[in-house]
Length: 429
Image (cartoon, rainbow, N blue to C red; front, top):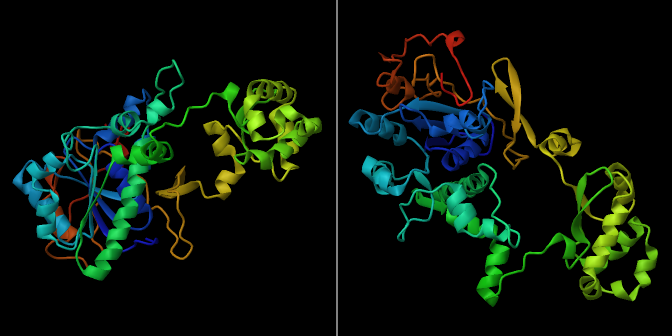
């Protein structure tokens, strides 16, 4: 497998999105990721069913679990924990988003794992941090990242209700942070010879996401007012609607710089000499009638025609407000590497790419997620020994202790008949 972290072994004990997303990024970048699941499976396997569909696939779960190998372990038993520690013996990284209290009860807290393998980098995502009254409180990103960190409130219009977060927004953000922290800790290990605990929380990730606002409040005691479209102080930094109903965003952050280009685009050069719009402050005072006038002008043509006029002005910055369908059809999205082909047997399927490229050590996903077998609540782990990795602690030895489909799995055991697999939305047979 190619990628900047090829040769790194990651053991993941992740549920839902944040932990699995961290390990998925590392897997995309070349790490060998072994995912530990309980006999009931990662609850994220239910996402498809929760979406109310029966598509035969589970897109959210596949996004965060491609390129991994998986093993079922009952960590409430001594045998399950023993096998987990066999996996951790030669691991470089352990990634989890299980609550600290549960990890301690399982004997998989940092002190226990690092005592077993001092070189391991232990990556932990919590809801609210490692200390404090809510350190062990349950949290999804909607709670800790979106609601409690102030993100939802900042996006709530006056007199309105908080908007709903899209699925996994905070989790994926935290996953990127932890993946970066893990890589930094691996670099530190090259210098010190020992691993360390690296952490992030959904709460802190949310605060960092709105740090433009939060740091302003910390230093001034005043929040930044939430602007309204109809009265935005800088009309060059606003969204408008074309005659065909397509929305677009003008991003003239430097008001005086971009104002002349806007006047030329809309065919109003006389506005440049109008004292009502003489500078940024004057335009802010007269923003309501100016925005109303721009609304009327932009409504006269479809966006396709406006885009030609926009392109003729180098100092006019803008973007369409795309639907998902628009994004998938966007030539630039594909050119930027936004889609990656994930191997699936003799073919491949398109998925959203991890948002970083390495030109010296390019990465490529290894394959899709592992699926549940026909026997209820058991699935084939597809363990394969790495080159030169046999004997105690190798996958060959581990397979002898793993029980799937009610039968002990030996190195010579036949794989289950894949034609009998019934994979529905959510991953359960």
